[in-house]
Image: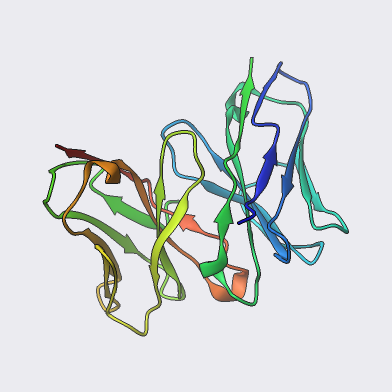
Length: 114
Length: 113
């Protein structure tokens, strides 16, 4: 079965650089969620999109932005990177009509800021 | 502010034993309570979930017990196996907010042979 695809798997950036993370949801999933998981921490909700519109916003810094495109893939753009942005970034997708039981997480992008 | 409190932080259980992880929440509007299993370097995977209209749900070796009045829920893993060794997260969400998940801090479970 198709899964949520995230790219790249690993990314190393220097402080103050920018990074773009990509997420390709499961086909026919209309909702995408982004989470940030620091070392040894629980995942923190950043932002979500439903049908290409932002649907909910969590603890996403102003330096970060995201969007969902017409093919439903989503990109998380991170600027002015800080050491504290080093984390695993997960994308999840679901068909909203099914609800959270349909939630599927990708394998994540490990961002390291040096 | 952590909206879901999870304990214990770590747990060691012998093979064949019962693993019990507990969570508590404050927001009575939460209406969906899932448990996720996460292996190192992987994304969380849904194990089992419950809604407040039932007090218990069982799927195979995994059981959720839910106490609405106490605002607590727990995961029981029966006949624990070494392959169950992973980090377990409880979570809570609101269906009317698009199901953004509020996670607990996680429990690192080690099942010894």
